[in-house]
Image 1 (cartoon, rainbow, N blue to C red):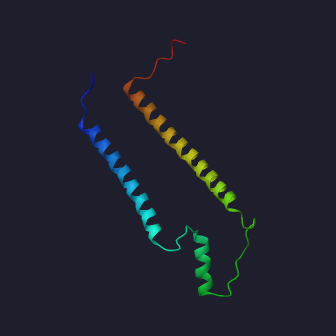
Image 2: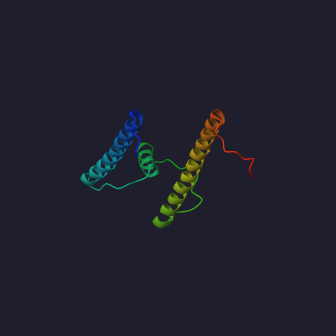
Image 3: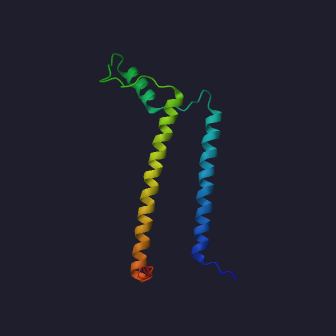
Length: 119
């Protein structure tokens, strides 16, 4: 026996579908835009800033130099993946923490906490 869907759950499903469609449209649009631009490469802001500074002030000297020289692409992408992984772990822990806190508060106000006296 299935329960009828409520308006709230249907709107949540529609919101999820809409957000997924938006994400796909953004991804496809960026790929299509990049394919039409000749010589388009993904570049960092550091390289672009250096070019602009050199154009404005040709005898500019940096205040410091990097601790490590130019790294191979594999190492750079590995470090980026490590950074993304650590960020994902922190974000997941924060979401889990707040979800657990919300569930605990809801159980405390509903009085539906599990009985721990049988152990």
